[in-house]
Image (cartoon, rainbow over all chains, first blue to last red; front, side, top):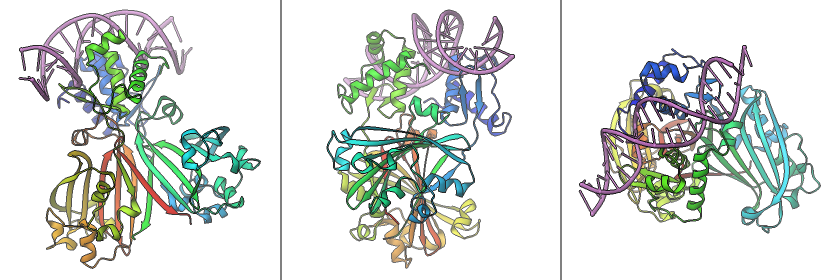
Length: 247
Length: 247
DNA sequence: GAGTGGTCTAGACCACTGA
DNA sequence: CAGTGGTCTAGACCACTCC
């Protein structure tokens, strides 16, 4: 943690050049051999400096192509209370569509559906470990760019024979269908964390290698959990907003 | 991004050993020379594997001492509605104390207080840019280990001549004092993000190099913002929980 | 094929910690 | 002091992208 480590000095120089737009957004930085010559440092040291900038979200590497200046934080601010409201659903807007409408991007998504035993989630759902869950694995895109991964799980006993086992759940999304099936949605709970992405997430979300925000949403009908939705989104690209009345 | 990169294999082996508690929480991993011998890999490769585990929050390094297994997510933050409730305050529990009581760690904190012009925050508070804010900069510790940085800002016109300009605000914390001063707390808003820590945060929070969670809480009295609290906590060490009634 | 970043080696010296 | 992790070098081969 030496304050004057060579790789930190180099990182600082490059950081300043990026901030003062010597290299603009999308520009390709000089290739490693050039940087080695310019700073008279070994390749390892240069790469350590670049890794620091990458971790800070300033640049991203493309294998066989080059190192590029990343766009600054594009903040999509999500307000969970609003986006999950019945009013939105009755306007046929799923949560993601609601954001799109609010923020002027064109949404799209792809879905895979499968079934698996509940295992660790059995207790949460109050079912047996061998009982099946319906899994809906979605990739959400904004203007074609993947911005969120969302894996939703529901007890199969709820979804069997319904459109919830199809790729397209129709207007208003999963929550609207659950209400039509007679479930009175009581409350939502979201558990938020931050971690580094795994290789798969890194690729899918086209992350530099900044962190991801993780959200597990649990939807309750009465005291019973009827849906668990695990979401992963870019830390650099997203902000979450929660609001509530005092007491 | 080779799926079978040597350093990833090594990281996986160690990860499994940690998860199956071959090495328990707090244990020192074998020193680098031992790992080099065991895996027949170069020091660089071993260190790359260890860096991966560090980024995942599984281990942390102590210069001159060793590599240690990190505790799992320590602080599960209470549902924000509850932890800021009047009921808690009336039991003399500030938000952080409430968590400590719930989770059995011994809380402590240190505070610095100063004053500064509102500048960028002027608009949010609805005051002039040159008007002063009272800044309360706190480090929260669990069993002596720093787990959260919190910088709270209030218009000085509110705090002048009150205990809010002292180091110790007394039982129930800042919010309790604001109510006593006649402010009717209306609502709270929290904006959550994730990013990489800067050097200072890395040191203070003793982070490997995993990400941090950031939370900006805005407390409203009527339509007016009376406190802005910027919190930074370890992504590996914290989970945030929000709950609300459906519609 | 030429040029890029990704991984790896074998060695060196330094800075920090604790006995 | 011995042992630890932190930084750095000079070189090698591989995998990917684009022409």
